[in-house]
Image (cartoon, rainbow, N blue to C red; front, side, top):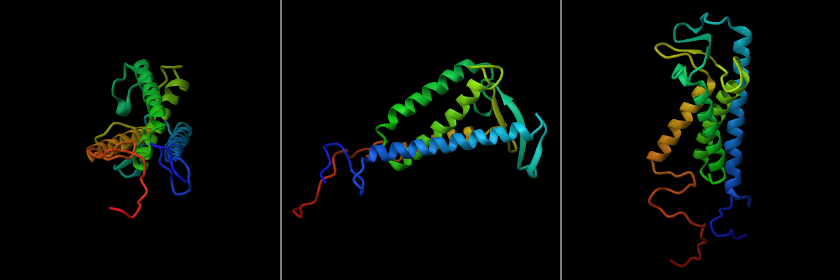
Length: 189
């Protein structure tokens, strides 16, 4: 089967763009589900502010409600942070249609899932819509208390930075090489 110009087909004949967008969405949903499940458990099982050692002083659980950004930054900007998280979600959904690179799909899926986890807290937790406080509960030495959404956002952003520095674009092309349709070899050089 011949692919249309600019469209790449996977080995089973499906459009790689939709396959990669599917990977991105599966990663995002998995991150969101895990983030929300752990936050529900933290709220149900932990007393606010009280440390529960998991690995001595290396990892503790400590429930806090964070009105700020990741790692308790910008605590007075909750509505602006809600708007920023919404913009990130919309931007990733927009670009997801053009992602052909599996590493980019996984990285952006992590950022999307983390942003959705944070955004859902901002929308549905107290003190109210657009002002909700994020549930944080993971504590390591010399670092602010955080959650799985924060971790997914940071890991995804780091992966995006590495991919960008290596010259790998979201469409699967490598910087300096022209992307184009897959050409069949005819045996002639």
